[in-house]
Image 1 (cartoon, rainbow, N blue to C red):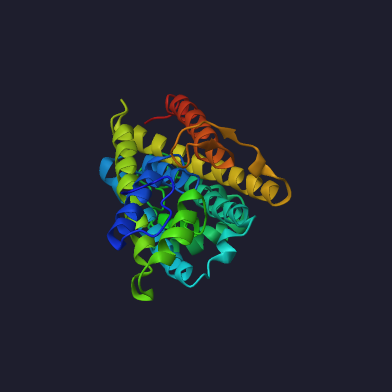
Image 2: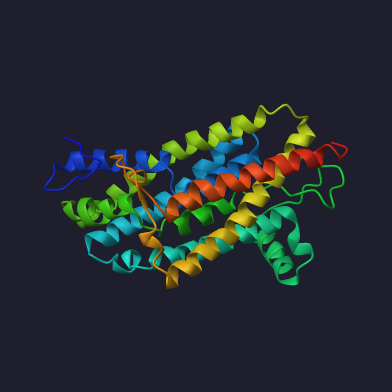
Length: 297
């Protein structure tokens, strides 16, 4: 019998595989600081169902690769560093920096800061991003979100741990019958996450596509909101990451009693994935809608 809360004991091989995939689906749909901020930011910037689907896929593809590698390492008990007490906060800092730089690129902040200007040039070259001056007053209009960067985000975010990752690394992967299939639980977990992230990305893209805005206004609003979510969200991730390295932030939790991982307790991860994310998104959306009223869009 599949137990998504505590799959303990010796379980049949196929039950372990099914459990891994279902855990990934639950992980993908519940609030999680390693997935939601990135998927929502890039999906909003794509302003279409297809673009949101692509954002969710690219992010989850890299995330899946990392989890498959970590699952293999877990079989040989080599994932200790990933489960260190403060490891998640170090990941927050790295993810936050990449979010901040990506948001800076979209909002063209790098044109006024020399170091970020260098990053813009590097990013455009590595990710093969072509400048698109398809909006009025293109010198100040935000750029299209570099969706390929979601691959980098996904791989970095995959190093973060939580209840789901601990189940894969400490319970399921060690029960694999051979090292040749030890990567499979992580792979299936990532694919389960991918299914839900693609669905969420598509839904967010569809929602943006059906705002009552002209095509040019929609492009401007979507890019602006995406850039602000990544820019300010990145700052938030870095701040929480630094504080978490020195303060016991893990103790700040609200127990809900819901028997679902990511929902049973609400802590720092919930703050980053929901309160900070949607707070920035709501403000950015209202601010940008007001802005477009004063522009020729």
